[in-house]
Image (cartoon, rainbow, N blue to C red; front, top):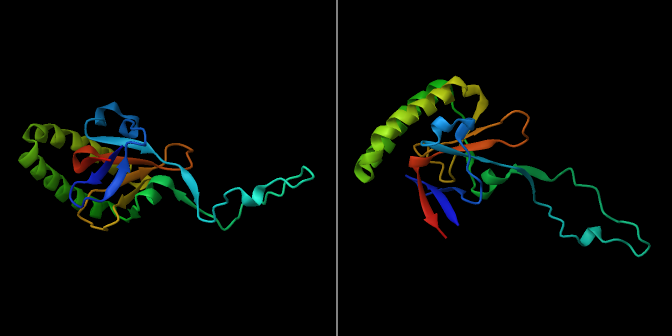
Length: 175
């Protein structure tokens, strides 16, 4: 299994257990980012089937779902991602610095990727800014605000968000 980590913090943020899709259903952005679909899952108060045994008369003694059970986004919970708010102005300032930071890293470690990254990331940022109010932003568990963002948005009537990751801002670790 591959685990994707933030390039600068080492925070685990995703894995290859989730199917990768073109970000925002846009093949033009596939070089710069990938998207995964999340799910809402119940957390806590797990029932391991003990309370749901059929009684000897053939009836069921299953209890109704506990309304106190917390529903969480599976990827956010599994990788301990933390939501972080941004205004459009704050995001614009952040992303300019972050692009420079990633580009500097690429210049040192993969100079052949720099030009493509700079071109493709501009298209990505343009899409985010054009749809800014549709996004929620997450960071890794270290809460480093200079680390990479995970972009969450809801597609249509989906109950859980899709999460988008910038490829060149991640490292891979095989387990």
